[in-house]
Every structure is written in structure tokens, then in C-alpha cells.
Amino acid sequence: MAKTSSIEKNNRRRRMVDQQAPKRKRLKALAKDRKKTPEERFAAQLKLAEMPRNGSKVRIRNRCEITGRPRGNYRKLRMCRNQLRELASQGRIPGMTKSSW
Image (tube, rainbow, N blue to C red; front, side, top):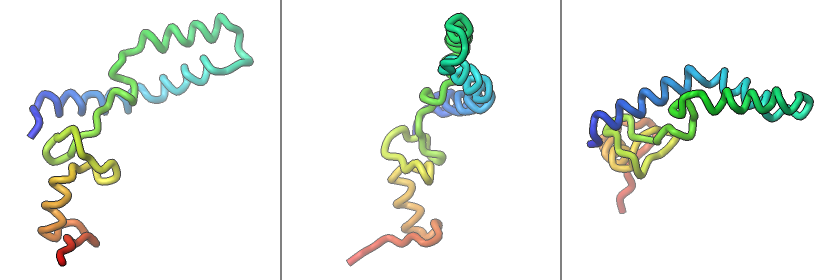
């Protein structure tokens, strides 16, 4: 089990990314637009740099929703391999069975 503070920090980052996404998208589009003047593009880049770093999507760490484990995660399920195996063995994941031979 990961530290509660690490899990909470990651959750705060997720919320901030959701909150800041439209503004970041607009500023990035402005900064990349070749039709705008260089001054406008540079101003957009400066505003983007002033925004909080935790608002960027790359700052989010993929963690297991159950345990908070940072490694060995399946992105689609947002679950670590250990929990996936455990839940599959118990039959709690529809359509998934543990193979044995």
C-alpha cells in the first residue's frame, strides 16, 4: 500500500488537470498558431509558463485505484497486476478467469 499522502497528491493533480485543461489547450493552440504575430505567440507561451506545473497532464502518475501502487499498472483498468490477479481469481472481474492447467 502506497503512502496516503502520495495517493492524495496524485488525486489533487488529477483534479487540477481537469480544471486547467481548457485554458492550457487554448494557450497551446495560440502559441502554435503561425498566423498570429510573434509577440502574441510569445505572450501565450509566457502565460502557459506561469500556470501551475501540476496542471499539466504529464505530472499525473498512473497508480492503482485500490492500493495506490505506482508500478505494474494496467491503464485501461487503472489497477495493478497484483490486484487484477486477486480479483480475477475471486471471479469479481466479468469475463476474466484465471487459467490453470
